[in-house]
Amino acid sequence: MGLGRSVPAMASVAEPVVKHALAAARSLKAEMPEAKKLYGGDMEGYEWWERHATLFEEARREYGPLKEEVYRLSPSIACRTSSDAEALAAASCLRPELRQALADGSGTALRSQLTEVCRDSAGYCVYRLDLLEEDFCDLLLAELDHLEASGIPLRRPNGMNRFGAILSQLGFQEGLLQPMMRLVVKPFARELWPEWVDPGDCDETYGFVVRYRIGEDLELAEHADTSNVTLNVCLGK
Image (cartoon, rainbow, N blue to C red; front, side, top):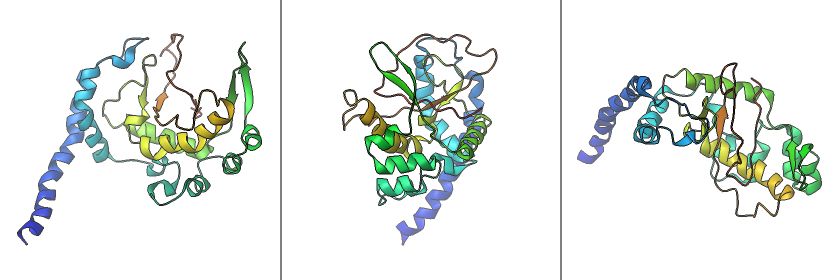
């Protein structure tokens, strides 16, 4: 009984520490490393960001989400017993015709969703497809605005873009980005570029959002993504 009684006592002691995280994170914003570099900026202030990573995660949990549903591709993602087919069928954030093509899985069905945008001299193409429902895009943008308004420092998204955030570090990785890679990106990649994407590839995912405004990031260096496949999504803002 002594051990049983210690559980609520431990919880009540720990809670003020959690509640203190948001204020502590906000107090660090004034000393946040400035994003200056237009090339190789992903290592800018690396030690500072790594040192405070746990605090910022605790602060985000204390702050809480505005639109909790945008952190999951599908409601069934949270249920570990659901199959990929069930998760895909319940992924209402995806366009219905896209879900149908992915459920079919044939090359003909997948390619029916694609429009060729451009082709290089070697014959490799960039493709476009209708991916997300507009309502989901609006909810995701609202959540990103909510996170930006939190006062918690946000790390620059990549080595070139100085304005935006790393979604993989903001709670989107397990429920949204990884299922998106497995259920959506990988089937298309295997169909289009089988020489680049083996069945065991695309197991690692890095997601970020970038912001473009007048006067911000006027020049971006030419670069090559260090990935098998890149998916760019226009959220409409």
